[in-house]
Length: 191
Picture 1 (cartoon, helix red, strand yellow):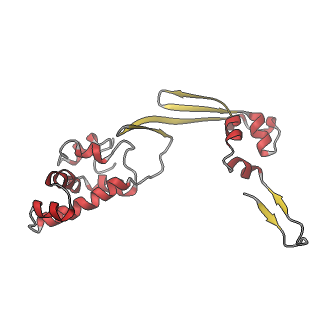
Picture 2 (tube, helix red, strand yellow; picture 1 turned 90 degrees about the vertical axis):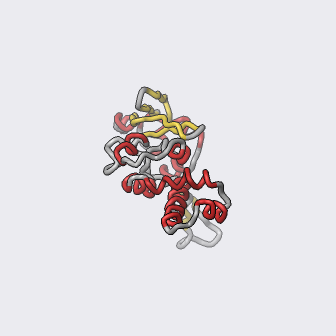
Picture 3 (cartoon, rainbow, N blue to C red; picture 1 turned 90 degrees about the horizontal axis):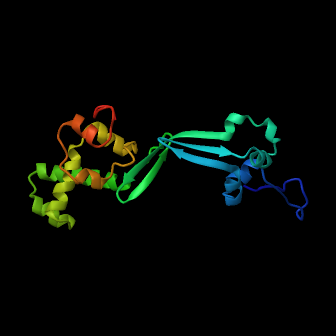
């Protein structure tokens, strides 16, 4: 970020200042690559070691005043498959709602409500422009455990839980089995 200080200066004079934090967050690829001394991916963790001199220069500090513990970043690490892509999950994952899952969950509830009102599956399919099998496989999302649905709504579902994974097989009606099958370790009532 560039800060401008103009208020007390003549119109023709502008002073541009950048802070050390501004330089670090400016997306400077050379600085970021120079900061990294080494990195290791080990079983279930990633370790990054930073260059004290480069970090000190960027922060306008002498390298010897930097606490050595801040030069090492050690975080839990997991590789999750998500469809055809691999996803690296480091540390605590920020909630990230999956728009595809959210849309499918909302549609599933609407379709199940229509079915409960007596609307034939063929009519639902025709009105949505989808096949009956498409509606049938996705409508089962309405029968996911409430806690799993809540996790999906909040974006707290496991990183590898996708719509494709859910519809690949029929959704079990037992919520504890769902929790295990879809990667919720503590049970369906507490994902």
